[in-house]
Length: 213
Image (cartoon, rainbow, N blue to C red; front, side):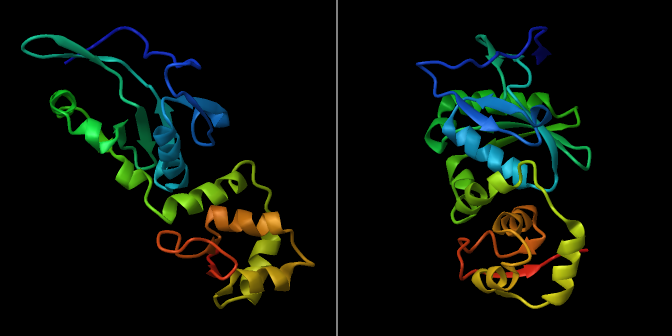
């Protein structure tokens, strides 16, 4: 595979494509990014909440992938950089499209071309991205990750006092005269206040407990 000496395509708002603005934190210096679909914007939430992800780049590079009959141009949806140093090119595609012969061959050739590099290829479909209640929890809490304001002294003090798990409604009631509701939700969004985010949709009845080192 030969890397093309041209920049990846620049996304612009379009009447044809469903271009979506996403208010990134880990990407683009914390500024808004453009992605090509609602599904890609939902995948961004997974990247933002993944503690192993350092940063990510939408539409990172365009590659030329030769085949027996023609040369295909291919731009991955994301380049993801992990804290451990690993990198991945990620393609977000609905299952019915990813399973087509065209894409199967394209992705197979692209993945093969990366064998001698330190970068891996990952194909992600809607089943993984739209998994509930995880996605709903991400959507509910993401606004509280953006520019969070936390008094760490208060956080440690409350964690020391409230050492057992309890319903979120009870914790809010006990702290309502000492801390804002927004800060409590920020604790949840940043993982200082823990619950089973994968299996339980966040509600006032959700059991929560502090997780502060």
